[in-house]
Image 1 (cartoon, rainbow, N blue to C red):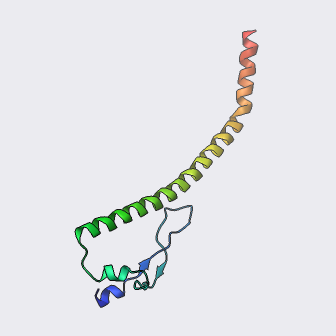
Image 2 (cartoon, rainbow, N blue to C red; image 1 turned 60 degrees about the vertical axis):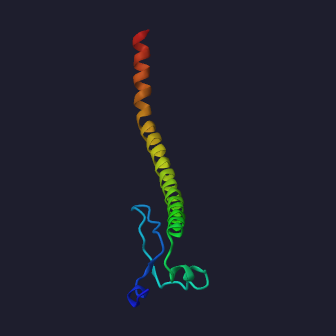
Image 3 (cartoon, rainbow, N blue to C red; image 1 turned 90 degrees about the vertical axis):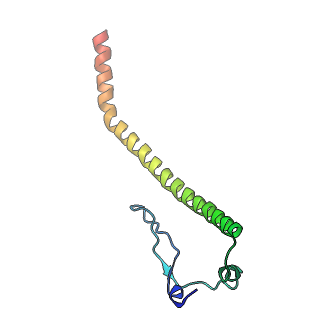
Length: 108
């Protein structure tokens, strides 16, 4: 790691703003990796098996995070769609009843 690398911020927090797509918003100082054991891995070159394993772990983690976030967004959108459909049906219901009554009177 160079001195320049030490100056790079770590982005950590996802916005909960419902109007926009999630974005990274919080910048924090780098964490101490020595307590986690990751420092040892970060200071030596990784062999291809380690790189593959770490990439697989990262892919799995990102997939889980995105799936959870997308499921939450999908659930909210489904609720909105149902509420909208119900309100549209309620608005159209009086006219549908009138039309049905007119059609039944015309048949008799």
